[in-house]
Image 1 (cartoon, rainbow, N blue to C red):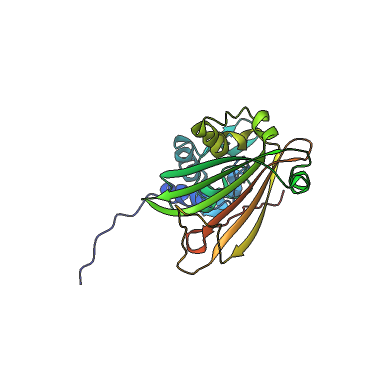
Image 2: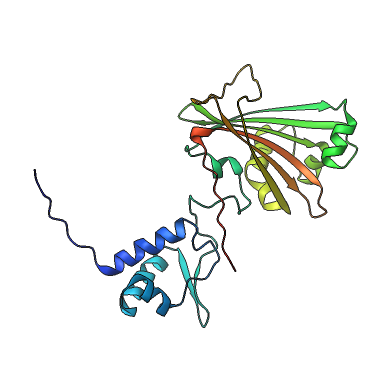
Length: 244
């Protein structure tokens, strides 16, 4: 048996690692304020000087910023993989544990023969309904599926050119989450997914997380509806909460 000689890390590096872990786990969410330096020194059991060295590293790496007279805050633009569903963003990327490197997409424009169904969901009389399927891949393996529905009015509202499928995909993947007013997500579990002749999403446990996502405008109307399927073994549902 051999024993390796390990150099002891400086105390301020330990402070950095502990605080980074707390930030990454959502204990201190994006935009929130860290405890005061005396409180943090006591929590970390280090001197104020050691604490400030650790905070300095976090500032250098872009995780926190100091606002004079107010304290240290988690930066708004920090990119943490563990950010939860409390942030409006692409839900597939938030909840799928795999690193997605490709998306297959198929758009279908149809005249709706069920006006009452469309009106009930989108609160408007729309004769044209757009269906957009997205299959997410990681190393050529399908790891998630999103089925999207929206009326032609939504396409006009967000300036979608339905003849440009890549352009529509970009809007649905990125832009729309910055433009909507709010969203809701209902979490369910299912043993089946929507069938497809060209794509197959599988689960080793024959169980999928089903996320039913509604995106709303400022008047409270649904502008777009997503049904997202992720194999349960490839899913991670996280919501960070804090008392204020």
